[in-house]
Image (cartoon, rainbow, N blue to C red; front, side, top):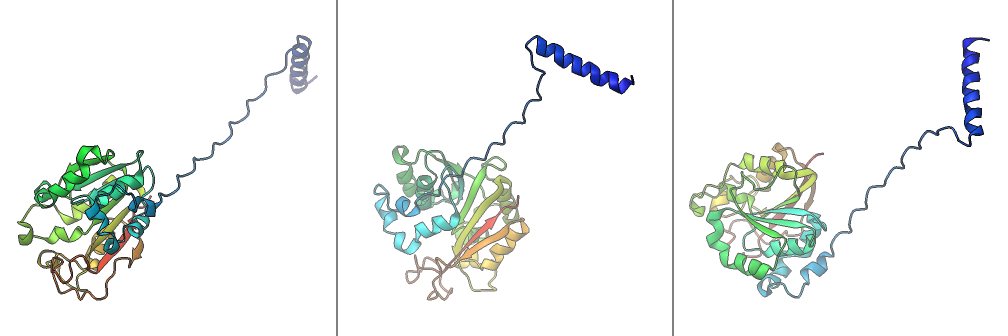
Length: 271
């Protein structure tokens, strides 16, 4: 009998012996079944967020012009998200973000300490008595954002990028370097996260100095900064466009204040 035949015979005898003792040969364990990824939560009801009866009355009065439900939907802010709100100001959008992400989400209300004098009363009203329990305040320059790497789902910068070029009109407050600011946004965003930008439109081809003179900015300047930082344009919206704005007046001019032509961009971080 060959060695191969002896091996087969030995295995067979062992199996017979185990059967005689009432034992079964050991079976190879089955591979564990794959677990399906949990379903993403449904998006918030943005219209209901805006219609919340306990919002501050002066905020609600601004809704017609600001179209917050549409802006929230465009921003893709979801339940449980972490939102980093750059230049949050007095908190108009902070409260809406807070309600949209819900108790499992977080909102960082960022702004330079030096700007606080312009909106402190409004900010205090929004945060009074822990109204927005999932919000924390971060006072920092735009190029040193207070958040860990890849920890944020959505960064918003509403009516803000022009500030990077606001010098004398902004008391020469050191706001940071523009390129580094966009690099910081990329650092804190998760791969696949969104950067949503809104600002007042300046005439195409206008210099950066319109950020100081009119508090406006040519969208192409902002687009170039975002692209250089590695972001991919995901969508552009005309929700806040106003063709009647000829872009020649400062945003605080009574004839155009609250009605400026504004651009709205959503970028995505690759990954």
